[in-house]
Image 1 (tube, each protein chain N blue to C red):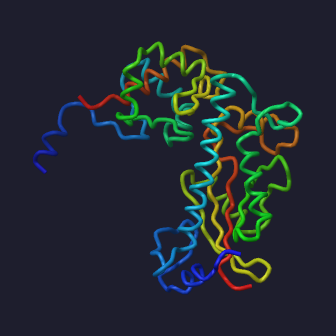
Image 2: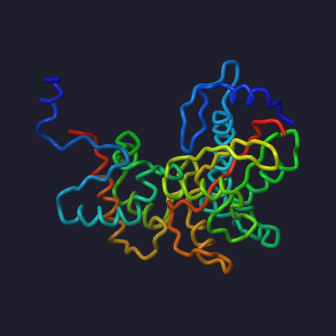
Image 3: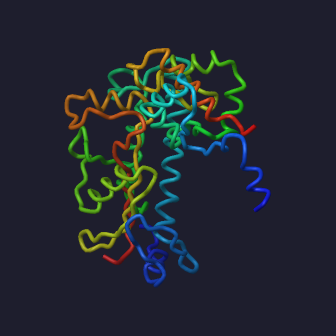
Amino acid sequence: MVCLAACGEGGPPAPVPGEAPPLTGERLEQGREIWLGTCGNCHARGVAGAPLIGDTAAWAPRIAQEPAVLHAHAIDGYVGPDGTMMPAKGGNPSLTDAQVRAAVDYMVAASQPPQ
Amino acid sequence: MMDRSLFAVALATPALLLTACGGGEPAAEGGITPKQMADALHAVMEADRTVYTRRVVNRLQNKEQVIQASEHFEDDKALPLPAQMFRFGAEMVAENEAAGFTYSLQSLWPINDQNAPRTEAEKTGLQFVADNPGENYYTTEALGGTEYFTAVYADTAVAPACVTCHNDHRDTPRSDFEIGDVMGGVVLRIPVGGS
């Protein structure tokens, strides 16, 4: 109990898979709004094999790639090695490329392992 | 016809309470419950459909771009849509009396009226899975003198093609689907009583 309380102080809370925490910063706040409107339809529930936001293990190999790769996959669509498919712009063509990049950056920030 | 004795045993077990969205009832001694049977069958269906979607359609259509998937796959010399493959399997099982159960893909917003729910259990179950993403619906119903265990599992839009086809179809009663929405459900029906 003492350890849990002591360890819980300080840094941000550990990510919870499927939950989209508010993050500070204008870009991340914008990204979260976009994420809630489109990306969360799949990434909050793991629809069609979509990695859950906050699932640090699932996101680690993805985050290890260059951000530009993740942005391109999200904007243009992507079929993964196991056949899972990320639809272009999450299936919402009304989003701009900049909005998609902001949503990706938010999901990456929300899926980082605790420091 | 499938041996119904296991299901009869299960229903005779006092601990087996079949309730909407209820789960977790213990297996009947020496057998399995109708819910366990239904969940197992659905797991196979879901796995087969996912494999076809990922390993065939997504790979050949979206990644290697060698062939399209189309509702009119014969005229277009294309792959059947995953939902069509699922229906073909359901139709084959329906023709096989030895299978002992039936399943179908239905929707409260069907493009084809024949895919609309007919029984109260189907209507209630489809509404339940639409209102409660991630949850299944279980009940029993009597049809034609036979008692059935009926399970409904959500069918979710997983690709742009699902959404655009349904939203843009001339016969669709609903045109605001988004990826991730529950568009319908798999209705699985197992006889559990004598006829």
